[in-house]
Length: 56
Image (cartoon, rainbow, N blue to C red):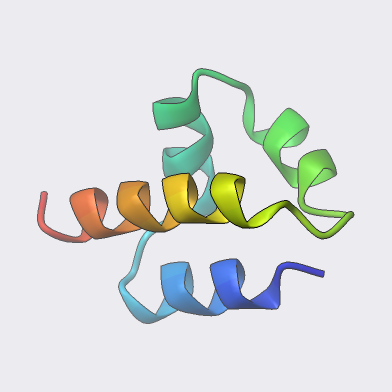
């Protein structure tokens, strides 16, 4: 599930906990959310966060 998110984050060296922090949730909560496929709107928000973090 959500392998596109995990692959993009790993490719840019962005950790999942960093994404969770930007979303205002714990890394364990974010990991649980990733167990089921997310809606496209949520994925876009996460991809935007990855892009932001890769440039930080």
